[in-house]
Image (cartoon, rainbow, N blue to C red; front, side, top):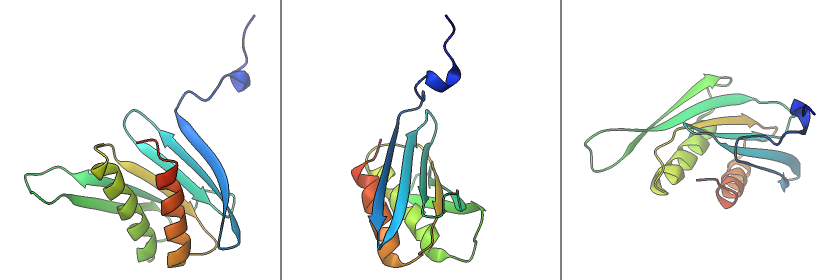
Length: 126
């Protein structure tokens, strides 16, 4: 008997959760692919701004990180700061995999971004 694709479990290790961040329902999906981590945080039901963050390989004692906006708002330094915090945490945990981060948020306050970073770290897959 053939199994339909819809009944198979998603083959990528992932965590899904919903939480309240400053009064806004926030859905988080954290996926661990072989070559990347993907984090989706949305309060609007869609992807929002998509960022790519990675540790730069080099001879420097102090690591450097590259964060770029792939799609979306390029004039929101708080979104870049969120991606930077997460890639620094990933790197300090011993992983060299880059991060793709999607932020679809109603509220771009520092408190909201801190809440999202904390929730992602608590439920991390690295």
